[in-house]
Image (cartoon, rainbow, N blue to C red; front, side):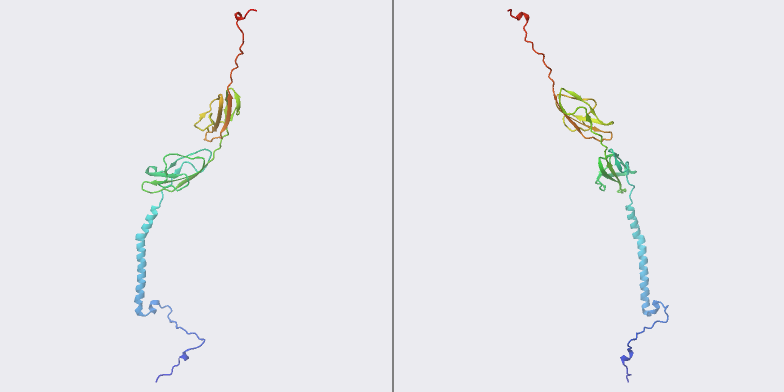
Length: 262
């Protein structure tokens, strides 16, 4: 005989189903599992531990030396040394670049602020810093390819220009030749021309008064100080008429013996 069973009897509305909790809460997971599965779990744990151990060993043997080698490859040599500090100058300074291992490599540099490399200018002698702003960057590359840190310097050259020279005679028209005295500030050299061309440091040096001859003369002059600062150009135009000596008046007389008698 089949006993009477009604599933409805197991349903209780409003009641939660309670899950039995093991009495030994300190029992390990392995012990709580069926004995047939324990060996697989232990094998998985052992395999994970072995994998970590193998990875750490391989990392120390292979990866760490590679990283150290890469670190050593980027170690830079000491940077080149500039003979002039960055700053503002009232003259054209001369810059020298040096390096403690100069005989073992080459110094490359730029003067436009760009990064120096083996395609840049090779430093073979002092660099003349001109007027305005100049950014010099340099690097030393040894014969084995090792490169130094980069050195740089920013230079601003602002000349304190001297005043223009002064002529003792103004432009104009004159009768007969004369001399012009040219004066300038102390410690300045005066350069001049007499053909209207621009004077520079290759022109005639003023040492004594300039003689203005007959005809048209365009006198131009400039003064240059000891630091190379050049003044503006001064000009004077002279139109000189030659003086013709006056002739003695002709006396229309006849010798006494040639005068007829009356």
